[in-house]
Length: 638
Image (cartoon, rainbow, N blue to C red):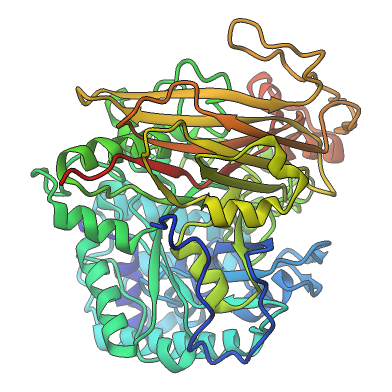
């Protein structure tokens, strides 16, 4: 089967017929050359800016086919705090607007389903394309079935035959859509208030295995308008990096790529080898690390931090796993335990240490963000206001939690397997394209599953409790590195300043954990999760290395909870008790809220539906945040 979001090829043809930081560089440089106008910047990154880097509008072929009729302008209006009417007729407004947004429509056949939908029926010669056209016009449910058929046909290699592709026509259509979108982004980009970033999704999907990347630009239309989105059909990831390098040379601009949904890659996202199976080279590892400084660790299609199979001693490893571990994206290939290692972020971070020990370069030295991957044009990630993955499971569908998503295969996922989403938090000195992008580039970013907790991490060698009494943020930057940075081993125990504040409109915090991974001298990989600080420490004493559960205030009959347990703020200075001189390691935070209702429980109460036992077991969860890691690197030998 051809690589890429291959079902785009059929629509394209049919439419054509129809028509690392180190300790000396911890403070970011000033914004430069953005063409955005000057705003006052803080001395240090002073707050997390909240955004979604993975949102689809009606320009994505699957989103339009599934029914969305909202475009980039509505997406930007909604994200920046304006009221918008959803495709299914519900008026909505974010109670707390986002600070930035990347519209990441699929680069393959942008707008092709809309053109198929709009085409005169008499001019559609292929019977299958004509039937899909009719289904898209019949009803939202039939439109969704048409797209499901299309995806299945692509996965099975049974797309309509005999079509005359017209690459020039598709390229012209993509260029028109891209140009219009860039103009809209520039119009909504308001430095200091709201940042609109250009991007697209590159959808490499060999045999249905997800290798997608969101491509995100730093620049305005004066530079991004000189290129068109790079299509994935019949390409390789190295060619995407070539495209990015060529953009930088041609325009002087900057661009990065964000891999996502490694949990449905069936082990291909984070391999130990080259994509062709050969030994990984230092040059390949170096290119990947440079092009992809951040990965998406959590989103609607599940959580990719880790899996109980990989982390059997981690009692919180099963979050967002249910349903998604079955196989690849279209469920055309079942997953096996052997695939797990290349599908989850924590294992990739460990693999990166092993590769670096061997090659001197770490291809997986990435930070982490969350985003939605919503195909509704609405960047929502709240459990009590989940607007669905696509219009078929917007709140207008009272049975959406029970709907199977099996795309015609013999295995399926159910609506409740969807997470409500995720958000990206960027520590920056101001809300501009340059500052947000540069935070991603230096990996000073973190992920949440939706709540807006404020999480900060600094690593160094001489932090003490006394630092909290002074300007501890200044101390963190001056005497250490922030999340995303690297420490050079000095033969001293690394020490970390850790701070977490609850979402002011959300749940209290249960605990803050430090996740450490390391490789020993023999090359064996290790991991351990430490409970660093938690609520009610005097009452909840650790026993046998485990902290007792925080409790559960969720009322399953009313989908409510109380903040009578947990803490509003948790902070600590933590010293690594398992440090060994010369050790190659990483450290990242996982911050857990107290248990709260998930969207299927809210739906059950709202619509009076009964959830089956397995859905009820997953109807309450502990939402969380993941920081980007800090790496500990041994000194280079002379």
